[in-house]
Image 1 (cartoon, rainbow, N blue to C red):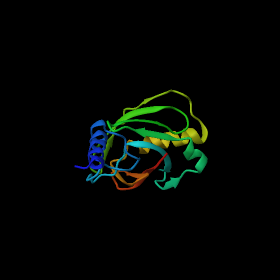
Image 2 (image 1 turned 90 degrees about the horizontal axis):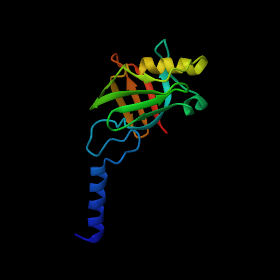
Image 3 (image 1 turned 180 degrees about the vertical axis):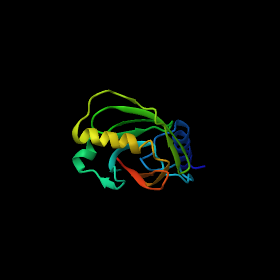
Image 4 (image 1 turned 120 degrees about the vertical axis):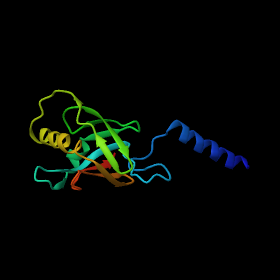
Amino acid sequence: MPAAGFRFVIAALAVTCLGASLAPGVAAAGDDRPGIAGEWRIGAIATEAGALVDLDGATSARTEVVIDRHGLWAASAGCNRLRGTLEQAGRTISVSDRVMATKMACQGPAGDLERRFMKYFPAAVEVDGVAGRVLLRDASGAAVVLLVGR
């Protein structure tokens, strides 16, 4: 094997063995599921009426959802820090409704966004996506949260 080919094989093995993180929304080669692990911001979220509505740029920029490859997630919708777990099998996900959270009183738009995130993120049971974007759907198939890569 030429030296360049050998270096490529070693580099590929290192990435595989060390579990290097992938870009948000990218699954491992040969995987049929959208990758949910990564660093995200909330791009859109369902309203109480059920419509998926885009967040304005400034509001979206203040949000953060980090999902690691072990199924732990941490988030902020602009107020409290939230932590929980999730499991993914193919396109199916299960987000625990048991969440650790700081206890700040969140009022106004930040409080509303956080309440909607805590309602719809745990309700997500299916994931669709492409590199840099993941759409979460509830049991009825309705789109409830759009995550966009940071």
